[in-house]
Image (tube, rainbow, N blue to C red; front, top):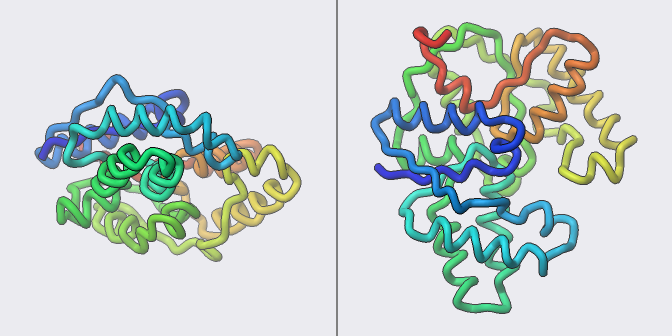
Length: 243
């Protein structure tokens, strides 16, 4: 299958390992991955902070960039959530663009969705010998409703000891600009999340969104806990040869 990679801003600028791991994983499974160089921000940040008019140009560019591809994947529940649930709304004043945005959104997938729902695979041949806990990010859980797909993938990773995260469905407190505009509340939510992560005794906390991992990982690092945050794609791309 020929799959277009939507890398997302955060992966491109701060967490390229997540995007690279997505490519390595899909190529290992026998698929061709292409990177459309015209891609930019999907506009989620603009939309969520009330700048829908400014986001329209980004939506138009995103549609034009990914329209030629039958399947699009992103290592981000939040960005896929924006494409699927916000783009057509932003483009509502242009019926043609809104229809095209809906079409692109219908074939855009978060990584775990693509693997299980489209490619029909749960065991990707990964090896990751660590004690791991999984944080279900708000957008993947509540917007995309990926359910237990990431957990099903992690359970097939050889060497991985998967431990349940207490109060897993509670938000980590990031929420994009929420963590800036409501810093005290965000910090309190982060403290709860970190406590639950540490209670598991895990070496690694994983999730499908680099943004949430940045928030959680930053807190764990400042406390010198020794617990790492690793994107789901990086775990699934790991093999005995790479470990």
